[in-house]
Length: 565
Image (spheres, helix red, strand yellow):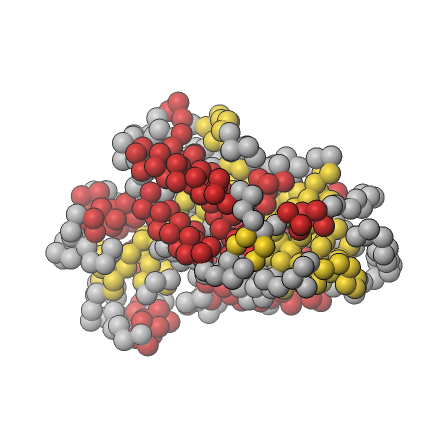
């Protein structure tokens, strides 16, 4: 049998550099794909900040930890493109209670209050802990320099030093170095395609790299795969962010929550560069193709300081009504003081100049793009899901942000809940038994690979469908049509005997399923709240102050939210 030649090998768990053994070839498919096996206490799926933080936390508890990542751990995913802004209660005028209230208000009062409290109470220490591994923040006279980010009532946002395009990549870099030093093992270039369960508990996972499978036997598994931004044509997210964790959790029996809430970053330049909202507090303005400061018509009080969701809708509407350019509008830096352009925004100004754009003299074209999934795997305060031994954190988890995420909360969330997930997974694995899964039967059930591009072509069509029907502005008829299309596609690929590319088949399978959860929740929520805007139901309705939970069979249940504190 498959596991007959396997025996778990031990070294003293007290040794920091304990190795996880990679067992020899165990079986093969018809196509000569090598299948190898790992037996570990904790498997972590993902390669960004939340995943690395989880792996380190579990390893510090003396557990054998394997981190499995699609790309290079610490050098792939959304962590690489982050602008390095993090929230915490650093100011004398701030407190966890005030932070909690701001998050709940920003969430449309539908975030999970228990999860919000965890973030509000732990963000400060989590952010400061990075200084111990070599991450620096902007300081003035030795004190942290605090910015006021959108949705926050006080200045509580710190910036990586030196600030500038992609400066946030130092965080995963330093965490990767720490994980290596702690003895975390890495399996890079592999996507987990199946999480196995036995009697309602995790017992194994299967990973694939386009050529071969790897089998991982584990009593605890952490999903930290990020969001699903690459399911949309216009996105800030890099390749690989395709909602894999959502599918894996659902397939294993866990629930998802808040899937209708997808955040669109309003001001994206040059396809993926995020123009942060600080510029508007320093004098930048936004105009349409007619040189009109149009935001006054959408939010007369806040204008350019409006929320991301309102700004995205305004830009989208201007473009649709012919007052935009290539789906976007323009930002003028002209009224930002020259001194600030040469100091605070120097790296940004120099970056655009290197691309042939002198923002001191000409307007910058920006447009909205899919940026962040507020929804995700439903977790409790210990990052546990409905399935024993299965945990989720970071953007893969839902409930922390509700209908809208505050600027600066994404990285703080990854740090706080990444550590909690790792500790919880480690605790669960202690004394747990190792139960094998019938992986050979699963592999035998997969379609044959014949070559071709059918699946990748369908993926591109799905991305366009998501942008037009599940994007910034939604309404009943397109949502119903999209649900019908996705159901039909799901049926077409269920039990299919052959595919062009098995790797793209897995991505397409995941995409179809995840988009069904978004479409179903968006169709069910007959109101507008936060990032979810229904053109046919533009009002926020008090009876909808509840979360939508998508069960693993795609049925929907509601969870009323009670704001406390």
